[in-house]
Length: 212
Ligand code: ADP
Ligand code: MG
Image (cartoon, rainbow, N blue to C red; front, side):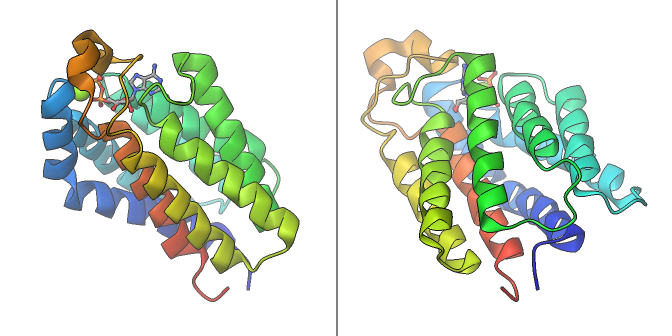
């Protein structure tokens, strides 16, 4: 059993559920170093995504991720809408024409998504953004694919890498986004976007590792 369209829709639904369940947590993190809306933004976006995904009929993975991207971009104001829109748009491009995803496909798609986020938002690793969770996850996925580890193991390692990257944002000084306005006062707080990106990797693991 591989990762096909049904697993990709479970991933999107699972991310929506995780965002809803962590809406207050993400918003609280953003209250500390931003404007207290990250959970609200992401939840609004993912709620708008769900009916659009349910309405799809052609079982195309690339089309699914494009639909997610468009819904996020059109419903979420703030930095995270365009940035998560970019993530899903790049997943869509990277996985174009594929009906089954291997670990190596997912690794390259995630890394391409991080590159696209960096091109759009100009964040470098260590700038205290979602890049700090997504990039280590992508790197670990590529390593796992090269080692030939089982899909579920590679996905679990990626979730762990995203979690470590998220925790590693705590001491960092924010250099991008609203948190950067705080300068040194941004230190000692976990980045909200890195936290939602860890949830994203966790949702992928839960959906894709099933039966693999
Ligand atoms: P806003 O900052 O507009 O209120 P959100 O609160 O929804 O938007 O999202 C904030 C998160 O977005 C931050 O925690 C950070 O991870 C991410 N972010 C902000 N700016 C950038 C950027 N330029 N590059 C990458 N990620 C960014
Ligand atoms: Mg905010």
